[in-house]
Image (cartoon, rainbow, N blue to C red; front, side, top):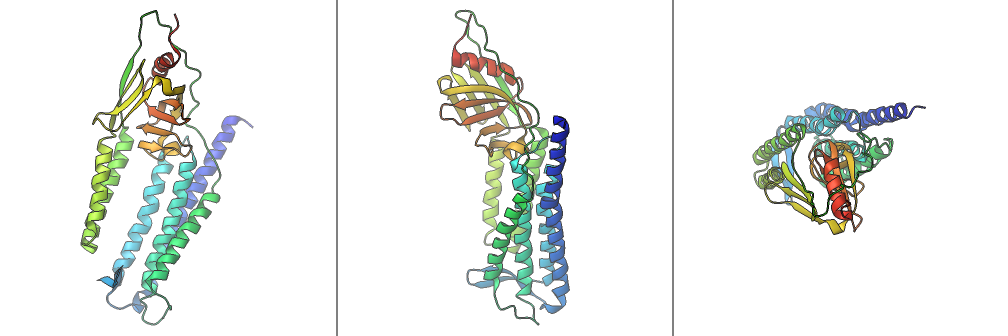
Length: 334
């Protein structure tokens, strides 16, 4: 069989399994839970508990509020996790995609059982024999079990976005000559749109929590502020390669990495797909242990340190940067 045909077949198989595990099954679970909750509405009091605190129930609302919450959250989670993957991962795939689908399925189980269980324990005609504690325990168990099932029913497929570049030549410098390479790299527009959308979602969530649970809204607010700060310092990086080694620094001054030429054992140019290999953009750690400043898809400079850890930074003209760095690590030849 032609290799390209085999790769395309594997990719289609992985995408199909991802869609079932990460999108279709969670939506079916959310729909079934909403239908069940709607069927129980006549059997519920006018106001039910919507929140349990350390000392018991401390939040109340009309039963239909829980139905709308399950409908909104039950659909939002799989859509936000799965749709970007299916839209953007058309030519590459990796274990991160597989994990995200499994996580989507597990979260669907947790959300559904928590919502349905909250309603079930408050039905007037039926005594289920347990309280909210066992409901949460069942939800967490379902999350783990469904997540594991979701992982193993998907095929183990890894498809790179393109072949890595061939061997990089060392520069031929004259005696006394020194080579240096400088560049700035900015996060791709698609990544910025997704990250901004995540921030807006967090802001909406914070407002929602502030309305429903004023005592803990500050937790969401802190998370939102930290995310905004992290995104702001990872939008643009400056990269310098010279005889000293590799420096990668945010335009904000932090974070930064200085890797001395004496600490580098291997230099190569690789093709990177942020979602497939690193699970997103920014400061990332891949499933294979590589750390990277991953701001866009495409060409990247990868160095392996004496510790065995690899560091990746996505840049244009990575081959020239690699040539300069190889020259620094091996010494120039005339």
